[in-house]
Image 1 (tube, rainbow, N blue to C red):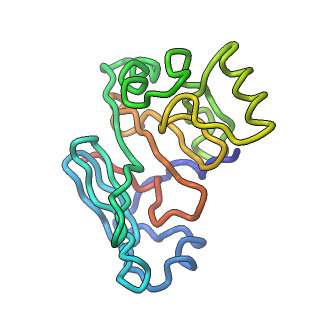
Image 2 (spheres, rainbow, N blue to C red):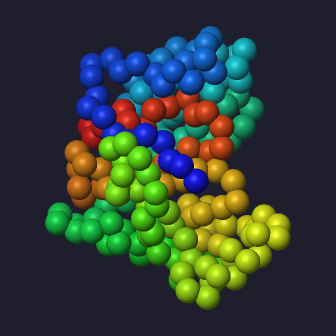
Length: 189
């Protein structure tokens, strides 16, 4: 599954992704600031369900909020030691994402393009658990074997180490629709 284009230098007021501009015509493009990170996103009014991002400082990221629905966490961060590798976050990621095969799950590099090439990872089962998931999923969609943060039959989720803060591993859930945010604009506060 292709992932979103790679991180680019953030300018003072970055422009939204053109496809998102078309999808969110009646919304306002704004910077959302949390205690740990900031991001540029659309904030929509009541005519578009009040869709907007809100900081989730407990998880070091952001939730997607809509009128009448509970906020859904879509960006969160995990810390690793200075000089560490993305796999150093795996115990915390597994703890945050229980699933039937979580004990076998690893951060696996995924194909990406642009500046994201070589920097994106999926949380997926390994060995016999991966083979069983792939076989069953080919017949009918399966529950995420690594929990909510892992691979699933639908959606686009990934992990990456922030270039601006290599002690922070980001989880980003791009969903399966056009998102109101641009992951290229995530910045450390």
